[in-house]
Length: 405
Image (cartoon, rainbow, N blue to C red; front, side, top):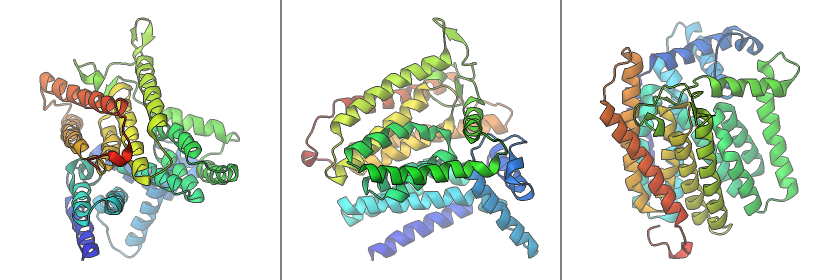
């Protein structure tokens, strides 16, 4: 009966998403997917980057597959709705995320609660608005972050290396998780041969994915070049993200501007670096290689705060990047129920941010919120970050005595 209910939740959320696919697509992003997909099908991969693209190869392979599927339908005189085709990978990632959340919940909570959590993941508007309406793929790289850590804790050597490689091939922001990977390898006492095997798999997949896209002799310089293009495209304080830089309408300012002789870009990096070190120090203290329940709570809570901190303080940040810390926070909330209030707040602010950006881009830069409203929402995101950081830093308990898990 329980499995049937889970299947019903996943299937109904799938149908719900398919019905929504014709609506809310951001034309710029969606046209990029279609255009890049066509180009990948028509040209050798080595010619692809001769025209503009700020994406790494990871998702380009997915777009190539989607382009082949479209050609196959056309060869039979059939048409497949483009909204369904190009939004399907992110929708599939949504559904896998629901299944993972259910499996984690079922292991430690009762069946009814596990199904309720599956529903929360399946129908949280903040999640399906990104994938099903906007048509973006932020859930995809987040899913591979999660899989990487799950495989690592379970000591599944090859899958850890594979999943990490895919995560870093999709979005450059994934480099944030590398220090956590190193700490967990140490804490979980991986043998040196295990580390080497996983590293070899990672390098083969990661470097191998770049090779078809370059005709340069130096593959490392090509990889660095692709990362630089992605990270340096929007050199502004905030790219419509409701974060620290949006307070007082300081967004869309060139982050090369100086304050105390230091560029705003490096101010953002400096503040985030301090926060990152602080979180890593606390993570080292409270992470124990014992009960997996504790591991998942501490790990996901720490990652939620790290990614939220990057959203709040780094420059060049898009509104969509709030989704990753939100998902990690939802997983942490499975074990610590009081975190759901913060999940609710960030879900609302994220939806507001997406809606603002969608209208701003599609309706000739029209602002649907007043300056005061933007300041309030941005400051609320900042306060949530501060509250979560304080909770982490004050966290001194024996996990077995945790009452709210």
